[in-house]
Length: 104
Image (cartoon, rainbow, N blue to C red; front, side):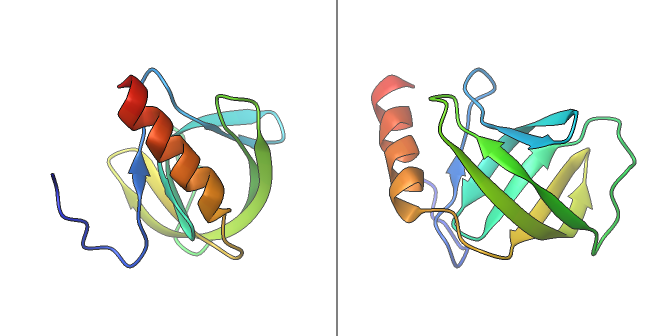
């Protein structure tokens, strides 16, 4: 098992089972989440810069959604990392982790 060196536990999603970040008409696949952060695939969009404020909705594959806002902290290889202003529910992150362990 890979040791996590981050302050908050992070769940990485396989390509076939990813939540999405919805902002107006734009949708991005989320690669991983923690209580206070997400990393999403921005693909070729160069619309994001460090310190941008992002407001949107995270929609999990089971249909549950949560409003979020956060600041862009990193852009690397087409992926954008956000530090969230308010935490995502730890219970939801744990439920997603358990689902992935059972099904992937």
